[in-house]
Length: 604
Image (tube, rainbow, N blue to C red):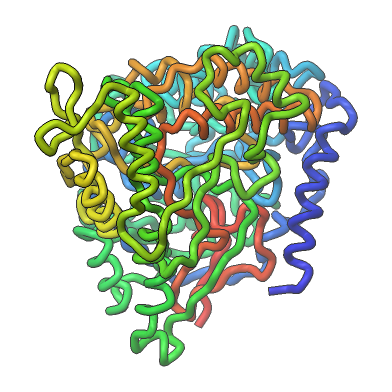
């Protein structure tokens, strides 16, 4: 790794912030678009800066995944589709660089045009763009895709579609979207919708789960699959976009395969036996202690650590406030106090990993933990009466005892909060004034051995408070079904967050998710303050306003006490075959969608 790597990270953040105050974007066709100012790469760029334009083509990469799949449509609520399907076989009008917080470059579209206020956006298609069957991509395909996804697709598409006042064809290869709401991010989001072939879906119900492979324009096609066991993608030798500058150094493998196994332990065994060729390891202690098998010692397998400077996001046990048990913030704080993170981290990770301090921690967008000041305080002030304690005054997670499973001091504080909320220990069990026990279920995905270990330690601590939750492990399909419909009390939760948060935050924290199935609002929060901060983020016209609004949102989420956070890592740990290589220059986001397998390659 080059010594100027971390310096470059700082420069990239500085460039992003500088672009926010850049000149206005004029209404003329351009090769790319950024959230603020202009994209970093010029119209004549040769390749993405983190791609090796000279990477050889060929070989294969094989991943192991826990669980399974029962659908091949990743764009709807029903069914459980394989991870790689939408990534490898379907494209969007614009492609994202993961070396910039939010810049898009022409992919299916050769140009993008918008006005200074971002009240509309227009895309012009490349005449050479083709579906995998060789047929041309038409404006009719694009318009059908957008309307179908916005009305019959997964709920994640609907919020953006609701802000489109008009979609119209403006030329033989051009389409314009006019918006009905002030939202500067919409011009970019409209370039990020999957483009599907309209003719393939005639006479079919798009919203129904099926094993029909959606036809796309991407560099790969589905070569073979068996539901729940494997899916293989073959590089399309006739792929229309091979010579695009955006694609130089990408899509290098002849074959990408995903094999599915019963649980994480079996995935690891499959890797050590050579059945798979790349594995991400999320447990730092395991990375240090168990990656010493024969293939590592012989050099056939190597260990790589990929750094990043993206927000920590949120991982942990989420509490569903739709259940009255968790509706009171004092109860949620008690649940957090009972979770001895320091002991769990020491037991499972050797104490090496930092705890997630807030949703956007580890980045410029993260909240301060002291009292809110300046513009952050101004944004929060109108909602002060309805915000949980600590939102404005300052909030930090409690610290536990790494040497003991039970932190008695935190448990006493937890019990005091529970008593304030109307729960007392009666005959050895925590009950309310009506004698009803404090009862809830923790839902986990089967085969997730690490999360099961965390839950086991946590349940033992809760028993000292008179709480004995049920822990239920379900297969991946049931887990998706239950979480889509919020049929859980507490569940394992992961939410990755970027340096360019925007409209997707409404899907994560918006009030519609309290009742509408399929949102990412698993906690069931209904906070007008959060929605106001998201609006301020998407309408921001300066770096100060955007960062202040995001930090204010971070305070609302963290002090809401919806999730019991665990740890995050500043690096991704990937063990892989020595024949698999990645570029020397690592993108700003590090190991993120768009990195592996996109810019990796195979070499003997």
